[in-house]
Image 1 (cartoon, rainbow, N blue to C red):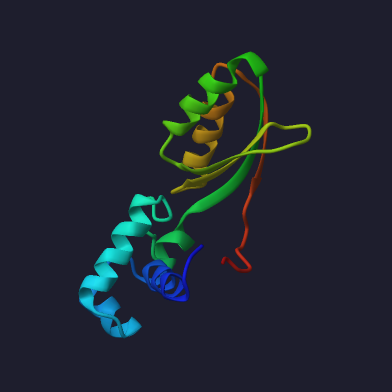
Image 2: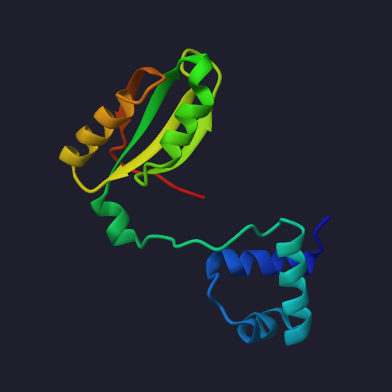
Length: 142
């Protein structure tokens, strides 16, 4: 279980993972060493797995994003997942129930790049078929 202080610390880190321990300590009204210890414990227990780069709004708005549903030959699922992991334009990959096996969230710098990316995904060994939907507008993101 996370304490209230841990939850507040995680909230601050989600807002700005580059915040200094001193700034976090001031915001939480805790000592610097206490905050450092909490961060280390959260990392060691796997609550914090890592720190990532978050794109700015203007850059994100310039990208063309799409959801790509992917039907995979069952015997090649692991191989296909590994190949999809190697495509840097795929930001997320979900296993799903239903007609398709996976949904990939892809981001390209142009519709032309998106078209080539969809061809690359469709041509992977193990991919039976794909269906893509271009994201026109993000209404909200949490």
